[in-house]
Structures are given as structure tokens and as C-alpha cells.
Image (cartoon, rainbow, N blue to C red; front, side, top):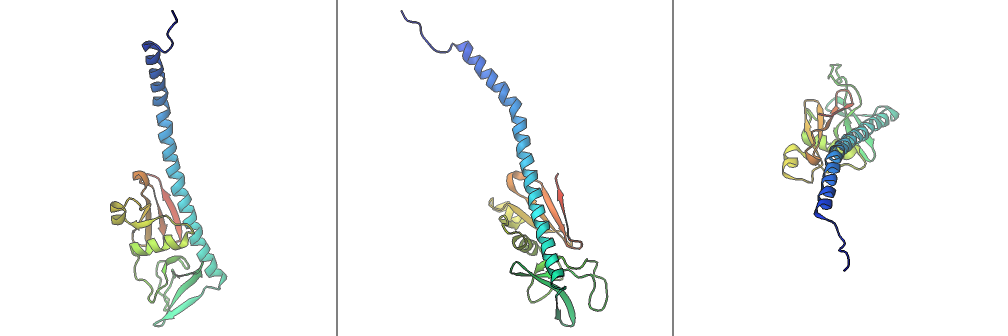
Amino acid sequence: MGRKSGFSLLELVIVVVIIGILAVTALPKLLGSIDDAKQASIQAMASGFASGVMAARTQWEAQSRPTVSIGGEKYNVVEYDGVEFWLTRSKTSSGVSTGLSDGYPIALKSGVFPDSVSDQMCIDLMENLLHSAPNMGTVSQANSDSSVQYSAQTGGTSCIYTQQEHNSAYQFVYDIKTGRVAVTLN
């Protein structure tokens, strides 16, 4: 009579226990890798955005700081990559300080220089300073639409961009006053 081949119940239990132990030890590393990938993603996005801000400012400097006059006031403007931007200015035409540094993108150029920063202006900046911008939306749009990858909101004279993928709390902030871009990894 031939011998039966196969695994005994004991051998099967031992294999399952070993696989379980390996899974428990590998899971934290996998989760850590996902978190590292999210951090790298937000840092790369912030770096690309900062490069766009500096490229627009450099273009403005290279064009000898162009301005437009509206109602007796001069406003800084630049055409960067086929898009016209309003840029910050440090003083009004009468010499009053604005509290801003010269030459950083604040909004897409329209008929009127903006008095304040809006969520939509922050979205427009992201979509036009980056060559391959992610799907953008306001915070309320991000809450109702899972395809929104980054939400934008204002914080005074700053644009706050928050990564929406996988419930991330990572964000970067564009300080329009100084042109600085800083990443927050909470």
C-alpha cells in the first residue's frame, strides 16, 4: 500500500504561525514606508511650488521689474510660462509700506489688483506655478470629492496647501509676504 502525501495538520499550523509572525513584524515597516512616501510627496510638491515662485520672481527681475498703472497706482506684474501674475509690492506709489516684499506671485492678473487673498487665488497659483499640478480644490470641495488631492485655503497673507490622500495631515504654506514655502509634517 502506498504512502499518502501531503501536509499534516501540525505542519499546516506551524506554517500559518510562522507566516503570521512574519506579517506582524513586516506590517510596521510597510506602514512606515507609506508614511515616508507621503512625506516625500508633500516635500516634492512644496519644492516644485517654491521653484515656480522663484522662477516667476526671477522672470520679473530679468524683465527689469515690469509694472502696470491703475488709477495712479503702480502694481508689479510678470508673464511667466504664458500666464500673467500680479506680484507683491513693498510700497504703494505714495511710499506707504504694504508689509510685503517685492516680486512674489499673489494672484493671476485680472483687471483689478486683489485687496486680499482668497482660496481660489491659492488654487490658481498652484495650478499655474506647477507644470503638473495635482487635482486641487477648496477644503469643502476636498471633503465632498475624493478625487481632490490637495486642498487650498487662505491664512491671512498665506496659502495653505494640505495633502488629502489617505487622510494625510501634511501641508505646506506659501507665505506671500516673503515668498517662503515651508512644509509642516504633523
